[in-house]
Length: 342
Image 1 (spheres, rainbow, N blue to C red):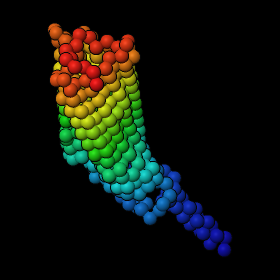
Image 2: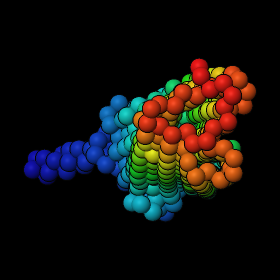
Image 3: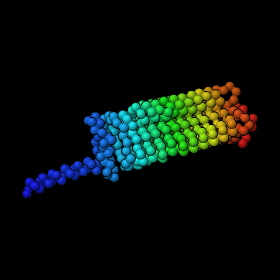
Image 4: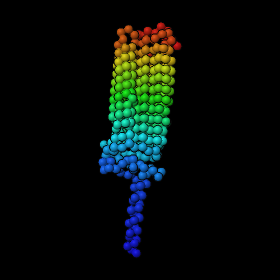
């Protein structure tokens, strides 16, 4: 009888430990030992409990799932060589890992996903997709050297970048399209082959304390009914305009600088509207500000447009329907605006 009780006790203990590993606690998946992240996710498919996975090694696999409340944490060297795709997942967190491979990096369809200290690098397609109402937050992360048309491509989705970098991608750094939004906090967008940030088709940009510089086209390019605000940020040394606002778009710039860009500092056209408040537009290799084709600009506060390298004018209006209003303290420099009032 005592022997039976002992055996039953051992079996009960084993069952409890197995249950804890299956339904709770932190699972360890080591891809260097032949284990699979995808299989670990599938083995927990029947449980609604939160799932935590410690991921180790280099995982050569495409990973897909749609469950909620998942946390996957690497050790900083952990790498997924393949795509990561999520469908309608909520409360999902990734931390301390790298994602690279021959195709796309991350694709999120609907749902909410957070990435902390995650590097999305050298994928042969776009680094990150957000579609169909996805919300993606990257903190202390990098999206770099991806080879598709954009480092990040958004459609009807939201991107939040905090203390992160979008650098060296082969196309545009971030493209926000079809009523998407992109929010930058203390983030750098640098050395992308196309524009730094392209906002279009009713999308929104918000930037605070960020640096958008050294990109191959425009620093921030807005068109087709988009809007936004830029606060205390530097938009410098891009190969074309620092800011280009067109096609019924609107932008407010508070503080910061638009400087050293390879063409004009700011270009506003096609029924677009721009406000510069306490901002500096200087040292651009052309005019500081060009207003054309029904564009409108208001200069407020201590805004100054000066020291741009065009030898004739700092501010130029192309045609009588280009409008500018200069506040009492603001300085537009020498202007060529035949009919500047609104």
